[in-house]
Length: 306
Image 1: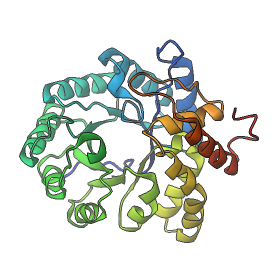
Image 2: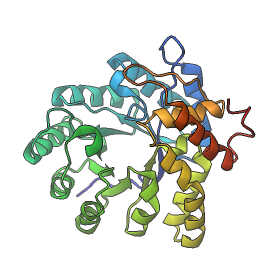
Image 3: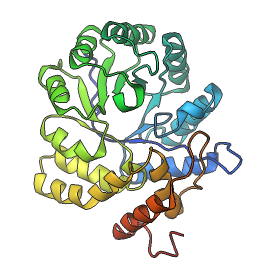
Image 4: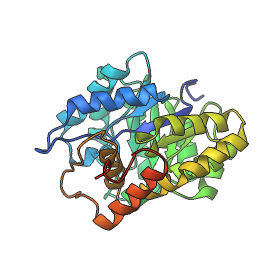
């Protein structure tokens, strides 16, 4: 039976990683961002995922970001540490390291580039789960990034066979696939949306929440919308959904986390720095983002977002 986690529900934030101009991690801003999330009502934090640019960070940097997040969040929010790799042995090592640091769970993305078969995906995730049997594991299905879809039956097989595989972050965009998981999942297995824009419809279908990009900018509104939907207050949740939908959409006008970092820079939350091969967004996209964040009242005027 799937390990029961009452806290695996609501709005989680896929945290950005703030960098300084020299490319180093801006630890002071990271602490501030984590604190802002918690004060905004977010109860789950996910460092070192796609939005956190973990692909360009070293193992030690990943470990440092996870440790800082745990330190700030301790006792106030749960930390689901990004610990994935396209090497099963490395993913096991990263997971053990995150657990030793005090992470509450680990996020395991489908291996990229290798393009394993469904049997290979099953073997990969099962090996990780067995290596850290006391640690909750959240699968992460994002075919647009990995070129490898975790089929519904593979997710369900893992959920049934591995007690500590407790959830999936589903960002396939395939509603039929996600509904199959929701319909056939074992008791206590959670499904969280990996796409902000479909959070509300997926909760209506039975999902437990969202691992959000938009909550980097609006933790209060995303946590409110998710909680309203989970509480069955559909009219209020729908109103809030449509209010923030333009931001959810504009965050992906270019490759994430480019747009969300641009918006956060306009809000004065961080410096808009990336590591190659990521580069700042175009001025055309920047103008569109500025318009959306101004409409939401996140910046006061054009000059404030310049």
